[in-house]
Structures are given as C-alpha cells and as structure tokens.
Image 1: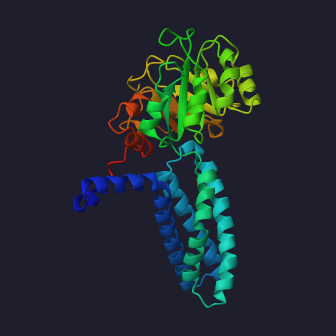
Image 2: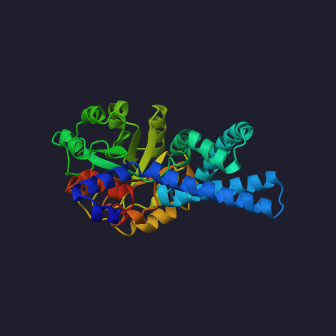
Amino acid sequence: MTAIHTFLNPELASRLQFLFYRYRFVLVYVAFGFLSLCLEMVLFRGLQEVGLHTAAAYVLGLSAGIYFAYWMNVRFNFKVPIAKRNRALILFVIISVGSAGLQFLVHNWLSGLRWSYELSRFVVSGSVFFLAYLLHRRYSFSDYKQVGVAIYANGVEDIKGIFEKIGACSDFVHVDVIDDTYGEYQSDPKAYRLEVVQAYWPRKPVHIHIMSKTPSKWIEEVAPYVDTIFVHVEIDEELEPLVDRIQGMGKKAGVCVTMDTDVAAVKSVVGKLDALMLLTIPVPGQSGQVFMMDALDRIREINQWPERSHFELCVDGGVTEKNVQLLNVEKVVSGSTVLNSDDPQRQILRLQTSGNYERI
C-alpha cells in the first residue's frame, strides 16, 4: 500500500487504503483461493505425470488446496484463535468438499465441451466462489477477532456523537451498566439508553456488561435490547442460576472476571457459558487505563481449558493497536482508544487488523 501513496494524491490513496481494509476479508480470501487452486493444479498434473491414478491425483491435489486455503485464511486473514481452529478446520473442509462436489458435477458437463481440467476448474470455482465465501464467513471463520466499542448506559453519554464517529465500522457494540453497588464512578445508569443504542446500530450485536453486585435486578430490563449479557463472578448472588436465567431468555450468557480474581472462579459454570470476558485494567469501570500485561498469562491459561472451544473469549480494557496482536481471543472491546482517536473509524480498522493497518 506504500507504493499507492507514492503515485497518487494522498487523499485518494488514503481512500483506496480504507476501501481495501473494509473489504480485506473477501479480497484476501480471493487471493488465497487463487493460490490454492494453482497448488491443486500443479499437484494434480504432477501426480498424473508420475503415474498416479487420475482419481487419486485429484483427491490429493484437492486436499492440499483445501488445507492451504484454510491455513492461510485462519492464520493471516481471519486470525482465528488457536483454541477454535479445529472447529474452523472441520467446517471449512465440509463446506469446501461440498463446493468441490458441485464443481465436479459442472466440470463433467464442461468436459463434454472439451474444456481442460484447469480451465473448467477456475471457471466453476469462480462461479460458486461467492456462495462458498458467505458460508465460510458465516460458519468456518465466525470466530475471527472482532472489535466492539464501549458505551456507557448513563444519562450523559453522547450516543449520537459516538455513532457519528464510528458509523457501522465496529463488529459489535459493548454497553456498560454500572450501578452504585459496584462503586462510586457511576451511580446513574439508564437501561432505556439501550433502546437508543439499538436504534443507531440495528444490525449490530449488542453486548451488555452489568457491573453490579446484584445483576438480577437489571437482567429483565436490558434483555429486550441485547444479544449477550455479561455478569461478574464477583457478585452477591449465585452465579449459575443467573447464567441459566439469561439463557432461558434466549440470550447468550457471559461472565466477566477482574484482574483481582483468579480465573478459576468461573470453572464451576464454564461448561454452560457462551462467553467469558477478562477486564484487563486495574480499576473496573474507568476508561483510559493501561492494559495489564499479566493478562496475557490469563489468556494462555484459559486457552488451554478443555471447554475453551465452547465459548468466546473477550478482552476489555487498555486495548490498543500496539498490544492487540498479542491477544489470542475472539473479541476485544475498546473505548477511549477509539473514541479519542483523530480518526475513530480508522482506529477500529487498526484493531481489527491487529495493528497492521499502516503496515500493508
């Protein structure tokens, strides 16, 4: 992308760079798909040349192409966490084999037109590409790193102003409800503000982070407007009944852990959880704090849990473009880093690309 700035007007180059990153997933997916097809073709013809049966050469070439496309996408494009890669591989293989089967049927028809294997493979692959991409994006790579912007559900937060800053760039919206049982920082939460959030981002998932010692008093009020409800492990109520209650309402249930609490405290309910969030700052509820590097050890520990593939892992607190590449998680939440940036939308892109926005 540096070469673009050399030959083009800086403003135009900046716009092109922005468009590239907005559509980077599909563009990089196309590139890896093309390379995987080339690899498949080379192996197929090479194995035929050494005398391998055509069917066996086809299967081996196809298998190598599928695995190459999977690995490159999971490692460099969607950046799926290690703990979720087995799931991604299974889904990727299922979708890819189904797509290849469809392509094989069309290829047989095209063979009657005397098209070469290579030509028919590229034409048919291109024809079904968009469908395959949508399926992979929806299922295989659903656990790629996503970025949410934090909003406070109080009477003074300028939700309209935040929308004007970030538009629809974030992957989800993260809303904090902090009541007076959790501290003196905020004592005026307004749950109805979630309706405003939903109105501005009608197609974005909304996560609610209830910072309260008695979260049960908020659950019924916030549930109609959110997709995921996080409660703390550090509460004055029984945790498991709350998780059951949230899921019984058709919402995803998440638990949040502060840096002062051993992550093992959630082990009693981890088998039921849809999400786990780590607060990675010293004082919960205050924005603008520095990320605590000890949290990296916590992430590594959690990623080794047997139950890890069944829930999403989210980090909230001190996330910047300088440390986001260290976070082996599915989701990150950022507040001041995005909203105090000179260009909030570009800052979101920096986080989504693990700090590589200006490097490519």
